[in-house]
Image (cartoon, rainbow, N blue to C red; front, side):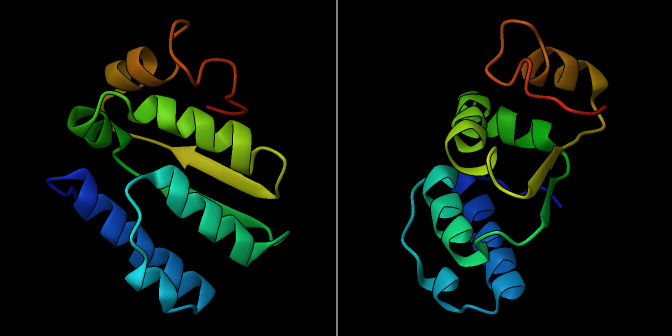
Length: 114
């Protein structure tokens, strides 16, 4: 299900993180970015093995072109040294190849599978 704004997407992710961690405070967090939210999440999960999947990631790109840079920062600063697998997928192969995996994009070189 696609949401119409970054705020709605953050709200849904807070809900999912709350369900996963069993911590209700996620629902009340006042965060303005995915980066902020992931910092709270990683503090809760510590070294647990976690798989996080963003389906239809191109919808987030359409809402905010800078989201790919945010996820590059999330990966580099928060998730890369943890036991976390981050999966970004979408049905628009062209957009995934150009906007996410392309040579000139922030996530280039961080892919471990396709």
